[in-house]
Image 1 (cartoon, helix red, strand yellow):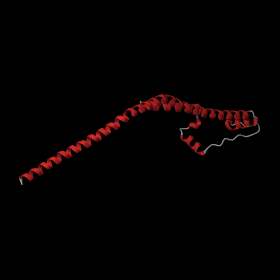
Image 2 (cartoon, one colour):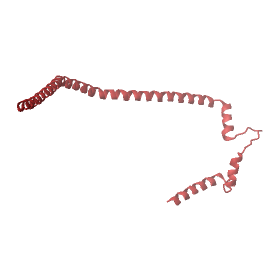
Image 3 (tube, helix red, strand yellow):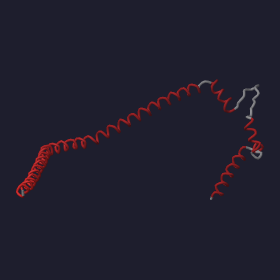
Image 4 (cartoon, one colour):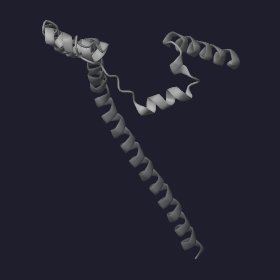
Amino acid sequence: MARSGDQDRFSTATRLRLLGEQTAARVYRSQSRRQARRSRLTGRAAFLALIVCSMVVALAYPMRQYVSQRADMADQERRMAEARERVEELRDEKARLQDDRYIQRLAREHLHYVLPGETGYTVIDPEAAEQRRTDEGAADRPWYSNVWDGVDRADRGQAQQR
């Protein structure tokens, strides 16, 4: 019996040793395959990476310049279109200013001119008139006094903030 127990123990130890050797052999084979695959691809991959990097470096600056110039061209075309529109507007305005009736209408609207024999009326907005009454009698003074009072008030406000 002692012998069969030794054989079982020996066979278990042998089995473990064989199992360890088989596992080591599998690991070694998988590592050698990976290294073989890596070694085959490493040279090719390095060469390909070198070519791709050199192409990127060679094309990066010209592509940046191309994109930048395209953006500048689009901006200049937009400005040119705006300038053309402005020129057309000014030509139309110049043509209108050649018309005496247009000049007369502008004088009536902006300068409140009236023709001889006409009576001019000025309509005051009720809200504006009410605000003038509340503004310390500003309507009774000349306009330049109101301007100077505004400048003085602004100056006093800044002096108080300091």
